[in-house]
Image (cartoon, rainbow, N blue to C red; front, top):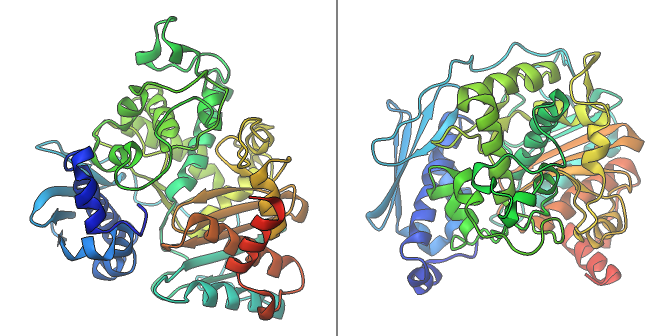
Length: 472
């Protein structure tokens, strides 16, 4: 949710959707603190103070109370004593928001896979930079993000030629700490969909198999898997993350996110316009649930076909109560495992001498979507092509052939084919997403070339200059 959201705004607009902002705030609080406590292993009080409170608004946070039940592996939150929300942690599936008497069943999975051989490191400790230039780049990245109340970066891992070049972690975080994807989960959903397309279980360009759209006269019948991946389906939720919008209601109130997203009346002709939204990827997650047999089936398939061969021993998907993965927002993995995921795409779907993803799927994912002026491919943002977004990011310093997974609160997984490099930067930031992207671009510039002198400006100043330069 937007960090500027405060109690006065919530109260003033609550009449538009009675109780929704308050329920969103408590759902957000319960889910985030549950996952922070039981999946990531962090102190819930610190996570509330440094991330949840500024996300829901400092004033609203004063009226929000939460209780951590370590024996029951649960967190409950209330707003001014009302609008209770409860999230529970269960084996194999992480945290789930529950309603009424419904409880998620644990999944029959090991907590972590055996350590993979891809990107193997003999060091349990972080790999220190051997190049003073890289060390200076990491110094600046962590120092800049720590300015003011925004604590910024949690982890950076830089991989070149298949080996860890350098990595660094914030206090309390390490190579074994699982970290939240937010919207980088969309890129994981992209991979799972690609596997089903390769098996012939899904057609990329035919009508998407959504039961509510089965009637040929339904305008949504023409929506394809490709359109959902490329965010050009016409799904209307948008990405305001305001606490008042339907996307945040879907994430923090709905039992069946895919059903809620698919039931919306879509806008315009399918494929004709672009709108970034979690709704498209909730629908894709519902398709995964239906094709693979619920949460257990999805988790088994993901472990067997994606996470294990890619070497992502720590990867964990979270699910809603319907058994669909939260494929728009909630995947956890260590920073090293996120780098392994990036290597999978860097190497055209290969890992450990095996073709994991379909050959050419990475190129498909990075190819610009014609109607996406912000520079989007299929489940990845792309710096290729002549879109306004791609030109802005190239101005900031991202190489023209690169593409990346991106998530709210400072998550970036950048794939740089020309440089044979993957760069992971993960955070728990309340800075605007555009500034987080600029910070990642500044890190890339510092790693690849002469470090930009401090007097030349911060990431915020670079962003402002580039926005002027391209007329954004």
